Image (tube, rainbow, N blue to C red; front, top):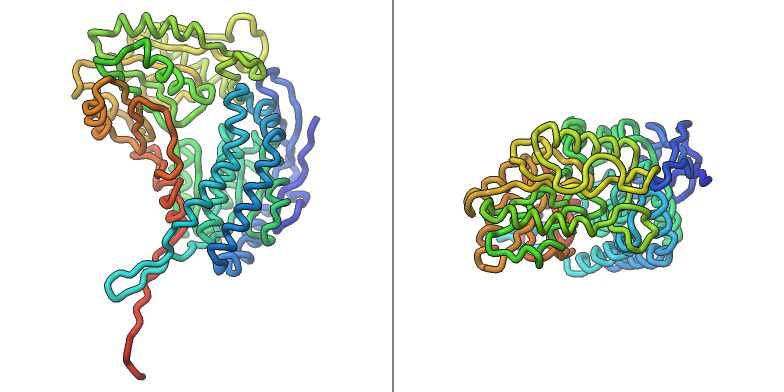
Length: 477
């Protein structure tokens, strides 16, 4: 059993002041496989002080110096791909294909930050003034359990590229992944205090970050409820915030779509990351006149989707991350039935043949409407809801009838029509006949799906403040 008993502050592995030990589980077996010692408020304060001390020197580094540091980080992370893969599969339960992507993504996002930094303009002329984009200060970075290493590296690389220093509070449920990342980042040899990582609870370490006057900015990925709390907690010190929050994303199937051809995209969008994805397309909007046909194709396709052992190459959906999350998903499946929706595929309980592990049957509801809770609330599991619509305008209205606005998918044969629909959907990202990702484009959400954007030059810009410089010319005082 692995015991993780250090946090990382001011360039050193240190035993935290905090005394609490947190159990780590293998979600495929429900067994305790490790423990992590959690930091407390005092540990968070030490980390913030270290980052504050390191900020003046780091903020004055050149573009070339930052790129060199980021390249060392990328190299060290990439060298630990296999160790990270093992941690992801064991601790999180990602199926092998998804786990490999999660193991390579951290190095990829650092490279993407390097590319964005190379072309980023830190100064520009505005009339007679010079506008200088300056790093905002110490950034507090709070990351979720559904892609812990990737979020750590993405947020940290972006903050460092902008000239900020950082204090990171990763999910305590992902401590094995975090440990691999910390060891790699330590090897990269960045100046002491430039980054600090403290495992701890959100209501302790996260709360300290949110309220501390020496934290200038918070970047958080997680639930909308926590995001709202962070805005309030940081208001007293006027913190800048970037929030990437929840979603209830629509997949809009237009009436000219070939259902057999698009069904793989529909299910991949909905079951992405075992359904534990903020961008998951969990509302499937289908033309009412073709609903029976869609149900027939969907039911047959879901029957081929396998939920089970993440180490099995044929597995598509792994376990939920925790018993709490499994119970949450089961509760929503029961709720959908109580609301009057019909189970087209899946349902309550574990998949056939599985007695242990937090596995969920890939589930699709039909006979639903957009006012049901299963259509309005983020379930964060492999549970999809089919909602019929009457005409293009109705489809757009249903797609936008949500408090979220993170992502959307539009599927159809007429590309011009697809684009017309896509332009009318209130979401930070709309994909047309694809699930591709473009790292140079901004990522974030409308409404309660967040504030601000990450990725590309927009991500770097979120850690900078414009300073206007006006200078007299030809005047002697």
